[in-house]
Each structure stands twice: as structure tokens, then as C-alpha cells.
Amino acid sequence: MNRKTWFHLAVLPVFALLAVGSSSPKKDGAADDKASTTSTTAGKLGSAILIGDAEWTVLDVVNRGSAMKANESYEKDASTTGTFVQVHFKVANKSKKEGTIGEIPKLLDTTGREFGTIESASAFRPKDTNGVFLDKIQPSMSKEFTEIYELPAGVTSVSMKAHDFGLFGTDKTIALGNLPPAPPAPVAAATTAPAAKAGAKSLGAAAAPAAKAKAAPSAAKK
Image (cartoon, rainbow, N blue to C red):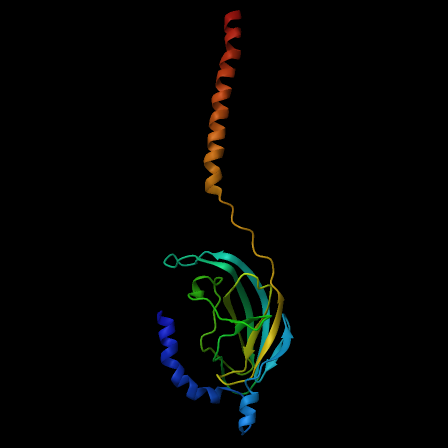
């Protein structure tokens, strides 16, 4: 268990007590509490969808393929039998109070399976991008985030499960559509270099005797 995971476990009990203050106001009664956690499908890639006081916009989706090179030298490269998917999104605060993003959004496939972000995601995100980590967003302001997910083979279409501020707010799904094509596999240049070098060497060796043979009659003529 890494340091970030331990920190999450330590702060969650405290944050749970504060989450209600960061969420949108709720009506009294058990029926309302039950309705607040019901997911409904709304929104699509590129369009803003308001969930309580949080306005979510998915900006782009990138298929990272089945292998990713780490940005950090101490981190191992990542590989999977499925696909890594990168989602870039923006969250805006439409209320008059500070809002806190209490949960990292998940991806859903067409069968309802939920997928969370990968471990050590920070080592694979593009430069100068951030993931969600109990981020606070001030009124009338927004922040952008990038998260990376691991999906099993066969998943071709996904949605993102987004939510209101706090831990107990309403959530909705944003349809991301079909996944874009995976990037081409990297060319193994190291394996072709020796063959090319050997070819050039044998070609030079074959040309040398021919040059000698051609030069000999001229010398004899003189």
C-alpha cells in the first residue's frame, strides 16, 4: 500500500464529517437521501452537465493502448492485456460556496461494470496535468483534471460516472461514446539495425573485388 493510499485512509473519516457542508443542500427525509445516490444518464463528450453545484465537461478521451512508458525513472512501465484510457475533464463550481471533489470519477462499460483509476497514475499523466485528490474549487471557478483507467479487452464504449461536490451528492453518467483507436505499436528499431549493418558490410565486401578486377586490365594495358 503506497503513501497516497495511507493518506486517503487517514483523512476519509475526517472528510466524511465535513462533506455535507461541501455538498449541495439536501431536503429532509430518507426518501431524498436515497434519491441523491441514483445515477441517471445525462450529457455527452464535450457538453457541460450540471450535477448539483458541480458542472462537469469531458474535454477529450485518449486511448493509450496496452503499454505506457513511465515519466519517472524510478517507476516501472505499465502494461495490460486490455487498454489504458486517459480522460481529460473540467469541473466548475456554480454555487456561492467552496466545493470539494470528494470522489474520483469512475468509468462504466455498457454492462454496468465500474473501473477506477490505475495505481501510480501520476507517473503516466501528460506533463503539467493533475488527477483528482480532494480538490477544493472556489465559487465561479474551475479546475481541469486528467485520469487514467485500465479497461479489460473487449470494452469498446464507456461512460464516466461524475458527481456533485462532497461524498454524498447526486451522481450522473456522461456518455463518452466509442473508444478512439489505439496508437500503433512502437517499431523495434534495435532489431533492424544489426541486419542493416550486416547488409551494408556484405555489399561493401562484394563491391571491393569487382573494383579490383576492373582496375587490373587498365594497369596491364599501360
